[in-house]
Amino acid sequence: MNLLETLRSPSVQTPNWRGQWARIWLQPSVFSAQRFLIGLAMMDSTGLCDFRLITGTEKFGCIYGDAGRDLVDQIITQARQALATAREHHTPVDARTLPPGVTIDPVGMVADRSPTQALETALVEAEIPMEPRPELVKAPRFKSRPADEVVAEVLDSIRLRMKLDANTLIRQDHFGDEKHTGMVNLVRPHAAGMVVSGWYANSQRVQLEFLLAANMVESYMAHHKKTGEAAVFLLAPTVEDGLSAKQSQEIDDALDQIDYHLRSRNLRSAVRNRVDDLAGDVAEWAKL
Amino acid sequence: MPATVRLGKISDSYLRYIGPLGEQIQAHLGENRTTHVASVCMDPDQPMVPGRSVVKFFHLSDKGWLNEYAAWTMAQILGVRVPPKAALLVGSRSDITDGHGPELKQATKHVSTPLVLWCTSAMEPHRNIQTALGRSWESSVLKTEAGRRIAAMDGWLGNCDRIASNLLWWASESGALMAIDHEKAAFNQDWTLKTPEHLDEPSADGTPARVRTHLIDHIQHARKSNDKKTRQAASGMANAISALSKHHPDAWKAFREDLAVAAGNNFGPAARDRLLSFLDYRVTEDSINRRLGLVI
Image (cartoon, rainbow over all chains, first blue to last red):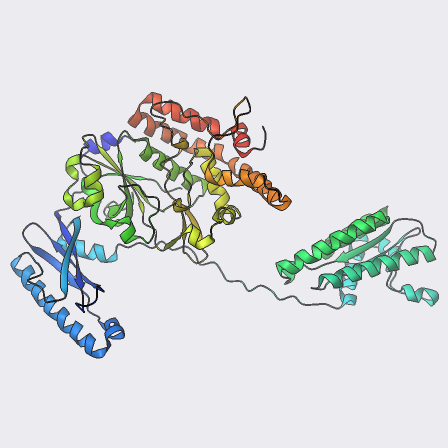
């Protein structure tokens, strides 16, 4: 790229016609400074070459009423006649040529193939690049689910992952004295654990379920004299499941707080948002 | 394939003076005293089709137009949103008439060397970024991917002029950031005269950076905040910008030769080497980390 070379190179295309363009204004009330752009004109050194005036005056009716609009129509018609005469004779246009309230305001240079082409270009050249409209996706609403259903889904996923080994781990039926610990659903020879549903929008409810499960597992371990690592596995919803960002953050904060206390009590805890992930955590704990 | 800057002559590509910037576009953005709106042929594929353009005047020997050209092209490669079309028009004093408006008329009164006009698409509708995002617009901008891309690019080019009026909030459906006005790249140092210094880096004796690019400066201030969360967020942003800056060497490879030719042909080999050595260093990982304060 060499700009001096570009300057010396022959022109690719030179516009045939050069002149000046002007805006045509209408000031309906001499007592108000308000004025409206009603047209464009192309002129050269000898006089008016071409012009365009607006054809629809409906919007003036909104401001000045029907009588005012009729008056605006008359003024524009007179201006059109005066400009057409000037164009025909190729004479200059000034305030004396135009009806009262209409003024012509020269702006600057213009170059194009012809005055008419310049007018057309001036009317359509404003460029508004468009970008694709993003698809409006309605955020899902949070749907609560029965705790039994959530737990059953996780246990099924554990069965899929661990195959026959899952039968020795999962304990869904309890008999006799064990009935009061019926919620403890993972039992190993020296330890016990529990899959629990945290599928709630309220952070306090999730916190409560988590603590209840931890208590229940610890009671079970003590009752059965198990000395291994107790565990609680909780499935919690996220923003993708319909929680608001605030609710999701509150749940995360609440669980972080409990997690710290449970670790200090030698209780393993895992909070996941996907069933498969939680089943993976259970499988890992079961192999210890 | 990124868009390219159209090269043309004022006599055949500057078609209509439209008016001063403030009169035509709501806010005075990205302007110097010569900035105005005109109808200019900017499309290399359709050289006869004009579009509404914001026009800025430079002398041929002024580094500003090459800074603008380099930044606009780099932005295309880096995925930073800039006005979609751009053109460099060259001409002589005799090409400028009274009809080209008071801005050009005044600026070119005593000029005898060739003139360069930097033209980019006039973007409408848009709002001032401070009106759209509030006084702490830097934080809002840096939270977006587009904002971090701009911060990374400014850091590389040493563009110290990313003030609110040089970042448009283009009022599209979702709102979009658009970077304009890069004539003050290389910390506004004249690389045609001497090798630009890396003013945003702390010196070897521990003297802190003298100037920083605006958005990175905002991050560095946030990193000194008393609030832990603000400090963490700022560190996260610095790391994100560092990650984005790692793509710069590839982009630089794609454009380095073109820029070398443009700078060499128009400003001479010495100026070209100074500009290239400035940009060559700033694309390195060491420079990125130093300006982001990640390694001292």
